[in-house]
Structures are given as structure tokens and as C-alpha cells.
Image (cartoon, rainbow, N blue to C red; front, side, top):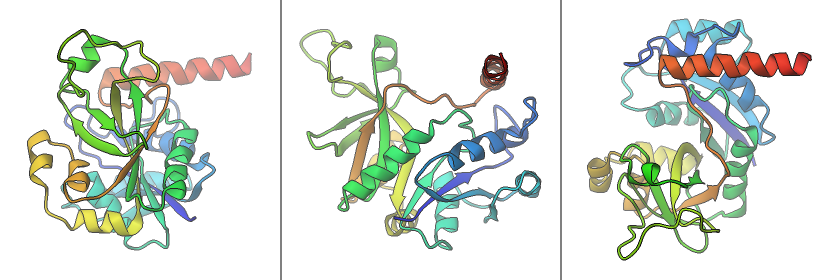
Length: 253
């Protein structure tokens, strides 16, 4: 199964402008993401998708593959879909360009879920919720699935809602799951999704994945032990730089 990992990267960011080109570690942030993606066993191709010449030049500088895209795309999914339309790949993984600590095994898990479930349009990941703060936080997207691992619904509200008692966050298997924004698509499904108007559920919750469920698609869910930490703010980037330097020091010792 040919799997392409596409990394959408744009220069503009309200909280961290020029994020892909941050270089306090000696490597561009997007380079860290690219190199992590290349470690995935499933990866047939790794491509950065951007509309910015500065990012294109940086990727070419470190020897990566890059594709220029339309600057008017409303979302990273649309940018990935444009690149997917040019590829000879059965599966396309959308890996955000601000995930420098992504576990390559998570990418392999996504590809494996689609390989094992040919009826599924998409695959995504979740991590157990173990505290009340995350459960009730509207910025933490929750997901529920059926016994076979198919996603039933995503919401910013607590789901499943516990009506008659306190939520048991220590239950095993976990009863509450936080969705992680990492997706694998069958190529044909991605192109169809990108050409489909937003679904009413998607517009209410502001969650793109509800376009798939709302139009009858199937999303397979994998559960991992811990979330990969993205870079959204200057503090996030500083934390990544510290962790990167500590890891290099540890390996050199």
C-alpha cells in the first residue's frame, strides 16, 4: 500500500508568525517534522505542501520534497487534497507542520488501520482522558466509538456525558477519549471530502471530521497512550527547544 505523508505548512500564524522557519535548534521547525515523518515505516513519500516561497526554499535547502499549492485554500485539508490529486498513492496522511515530536509509530498505526479496514474512508487517533479539566474543556475535542473502533461522533462538549454519577477517569479500557488532530485518508475519500460543502454538524461544532460522518463516511479510530505535543505558541516552541537540547545532551553523554 503506497502511503504519502503530506505536511501542510504556511507562514502566517496569529500566535506564532513564521512558525515553520523557526530555527533555534539549528534546524527549521518544518525540518524536524519532515525528518520524523521519514522515520515512519509506512512512508512511501513525504512532501511539504506550502504556498510560501520562503518555506519552499527552506525545504529545498535541507533536501526535502516540497509542492507549491494555491494560496487561497481555507484549510490545511484542502492544501493536502490539492497535493494528493497529483500523487499515485492509496493513502494520504495529513501531518501538521507544527508536530516536531510526532511519534513515527503513530503514523504507522494510522496506515495500518486503513490497511486492516478496507471499508474505512479515514483513520485518526485518540488518547485517554484522565482528568476532569480535559473532559470539560471545550478546546479539547472528544470522540466516542463503537465496539469495532469506528468513530460515532466528535464534540467539544463532554461525550459520553455522565448523567447519574462522577466520571471514572481511571477505567480500563478508558471511557473518555481526546481526539488527536492526525488523519489518514484514502486518496479518493480525501478528494471527495475536499469537494463536499461543509456539513451542518461541522459548522456547529467547527470540526472538519464531522463532514465525513455527516455524509455517511467511516472513520477508524486508534488509541495511543500519550498525545504528541504540537507547537502553537512561543512558549510551546521554547519547550520543544529545551527538550531537543536535553535529548541531544543525553545522547552525547
